[in-house]
Image (cartoon, rainbow, N blue to C red):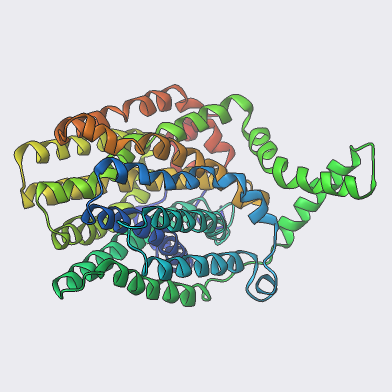
Length: 478
């Protein structure tokens, strides 16, 4: 019997699975997800539409998306975030919360600066501030994900699955409802005759950042005694192998335990071949979806939808459907197996991208728009919740922040590096949005091929991580 009350190897009932969502820890995990998702509104939807309405080209807007590249490399400094303490705050708030609060303060300062900038006359300044927001957001994600994972015991497989679903719901709540606030506020101020309506909107969004920081104080942080002890033991073992001592040995030991320890642990636990195969799949999985997402709000605007329409259908309705399908996706992953769930998610992503082609070719249609958004959110919910649950269970709790950041960054790298050229691709196609969305659908196929090739290795790996609830293949493996 596991600590969450389910028998190991048994598939829990639907009622039992939904009861896990009522655990009070899920509220905290949802809040952390919201804090993580909100900055994407600032440097994604709000920034893109701000630049579009100030007359900048699709290509410029697309290349501005390169700032998301910092999410792909945040694992480089994740070991430092895992070890370095914030003066004064860490002792009073805890290691994780101190980092989150400090980085939220950076984001709030950037919003205040944006409120006095004009992208037409100072595009470099606007993009530079966006880059700082992206760096702060990517850095806080390192510790948010660690704090989220540490809310659940390492042997609570079902609770981790539910937590992954709730974290995704929280992220989409921050992104979707934050987008509603941004777009509706901007539209209202614009209609009121304010010429600097976007700058004023950023001040309103800053108030949301403040509220998130207040709510963060309600998320408890467990003492890092076990994690610290394990890291200390690794440092001692590493130092014992050195043939020199003194200050140089102390520096080498600290750097080795901080930078090399997390990577060595991941490859040691999973094996070189399996670890590399998993990283390959993670890199490819959501590239097509990222291409669509980067240009979607530009497509909505060009096809004739207003900011209010986009807020209602893409953000408002999209949030409701995402919440529902994410919670359902968590249950689905438990019932049919993680590998099967990811296959289905990939196929759904391709099919929903084709629905946007239909919308592009048929012209403006609110019904088709709503249907495409709902189906796209369904596919995205299934894909994201299985992805988050998968990598959450693979991490070693001794290096929670670093290993999760590494895995998540690999996935972000594929999406960011390729999707930055999405605007250029649309321009190259002479604005043929239908063909563009067909291409994004085809982009899903390489990841599915990769998944097929490593499906048995994934099943065995999940058994090793005690995720028996997720894989029927694992149940059949002796």
